[in-house]
Amino acid sequence: MNWEQLLSLKRHGDTQKRERALQDETRLGFEVDFDRIIFSAAFRSLQDKTQVIPLSKTDFVHTRLTHSLEVSVVGRTLGRRVGKALLEKHANLRALGYTFNDFGAIVAAASVMHDIGNPPFGHSGEKAIGEYFKTGSGLKYKDQLSEKEYQDLIDFEGNANGFKIMTEDREGIPGGLRLSYATLGAFIKYPKESLPKKPTSDISDKKYGFFQSNKEAFLDIANELGMLRKNGDDIAFYRHPLAYLVEAADDICYTIIDFEDGINLGLIDESYALEYMSKLVTGINREKYYSLKHKKDRTGYLRAIAINTLVGEAVEIFLENEEAILQGEFDKSLLDKCKFEAQINDILKICIDKIYKSKEVIEKEVAGYKIIADLLDVFVTALNNKHNGELSNYDKLVLHLLPEEYQLESKDAYSRIMQICSYVASLSDGFAIRLHKKIKGNII
Image (cartoon, rainbow, N blue to C red; front, side, top):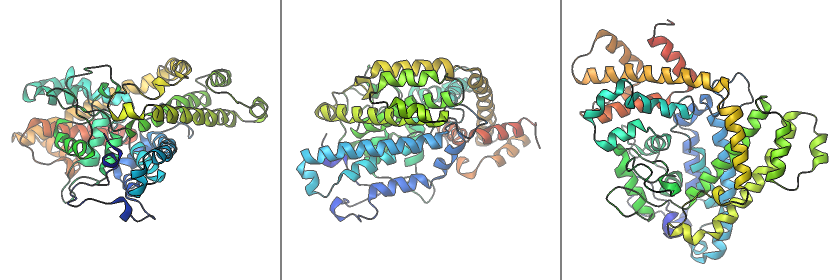
């Protein structure tokens, strides 16, 4: 892979190459990507989607929205620092007009949308959609689907749904948000289709990054960027290098900030904060730490220096392995290669024990499973009955609740089912609960 191709400013539908030197410096093309994402309806729904604690009653805990914004801030810094070093190494990029801000803008835009396809109720929402088709009422549709289409459903993936949201044609709007290919490439952490599942231990094979309905868009982007294709008949590529920075930004934020949330919510004793952070970073000013009166200020201080330390680590590892990354020979996440891997794993373990497995989280995830399964069942049934000319009066009423853009006529079962999955995934936690109450007759 080469950087000039990887930094493509091309957008869906372009017939001529966009030259970096001709960009408006007051609003770069990569910055336009960020703006389009921020103003999208899909991004707004993240304000009421679970990050760690579903439906938290406090105003402190992070949502998908605040998490995404924080990841973008860290991603921007990672991109700028890496970009500065790469421009010193690759004089041809400077000659073409690229600056370190381009790298920062690409990583920030890809980072701010990294969770945009996630369903309500956190990662359990993805599992709930998958279980509906694997063991629930949706199993009856298996015979109407290809093997890979069915795998898309039983392993429903928020990353693939995000790619669908960002790139899929809508009436009058070809190419979705028409983001630059460089930003879309950096967004795709898992550049492969749903099968074969985890064919290797390579980090890029851990999950999948696009649905069967969007594979042509994916191939167009991957080929334009010059991403390396893996051997075999199935569609699988090595990552766009900047995807490693997007992943690192996310890893840094959820590791440190979930830990901070757990402490501030009282799920983790504050004494763990200084103990675990002292193992992660040096240079903690204990006098300053103990001088801070409020717990939120103390944990905020530790969080800031921990993030700064891990950002420096990620940049160093990326630059040391740039050639291997460009050749598709780097198979781990950046933090998996850092000297603080053991300390990070210790923090993740306590988060799992004290937060992710807490009664508050599990109770709401259980409710989320039921809500998502019921919504899928009602809407998939109604849309299929409409296609088959078997609409009941109830189906007709249900379809009035379904936005027009999700009622598109389609001859194949996969497309109809995927429309409903995308709709349910688009819902915020609160709206999913209210809609479920309506279809169950619990509120009028």
